Length: 181
Image (cartoon, rainbow, N blue to C red; front, side, top):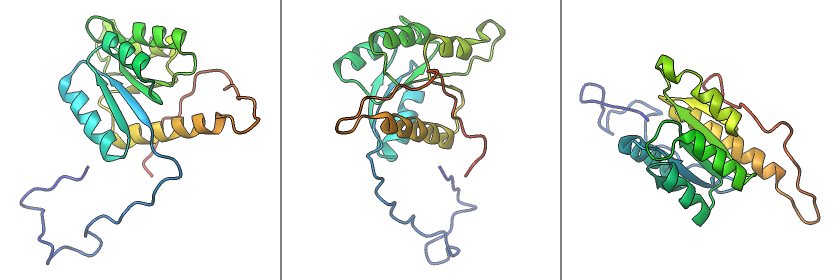
C-alpha cells in the first residue's frame, strides 16, 4: 500500500510521469480463491480482509479456532490463515483438528510469538500440519505471494479428466519469498 501525505501528494495536473492511475490488471487464469482468516484481533482481521478482498479473494472471517473450524466445516476454503494465540481454541488445536478432519486443507500459521515462553510456536504449527508459517507483522506482498504459490501448487495437483490425484511429497513446504520482486 502506498501512503501519501500533504507534503508528498501531487495533484493530477502536476503528477510525475508514471504516477498516474494504476493500469488495469490482466485477469489471472484462475480466480484467486477463497481464504478463511482465523484471527482474534479485530483490527488484524479487518486489515487482512481488506487486503485479500482488494486482491480478488473471497474471504470468510472467524474470531477464534472454534468459529474457524465451524466455518470451514460449513464452507471449505482454498486456504486457511490461522493465528496461533487465540482464546477458546488456539491455532495449534485448530490446525491439528482441521488437518485430521480435512487432510487436504491448505494451512498457513501466523504469529508474532516474540516472547520467550512462546518461542517455537511456528515450529509447533508446522509439526501440527501447517504448510507455511509467517511471522507477524506480515508484509502484504509476502502474504500475497505465499497465497499465490500455495494455490498454484494446489491447482497443479488437481486431477483433470482421468488423472489420479497427485500427492505432495513430504507435506511441509516453505515457499516464503526472500526478496521483493
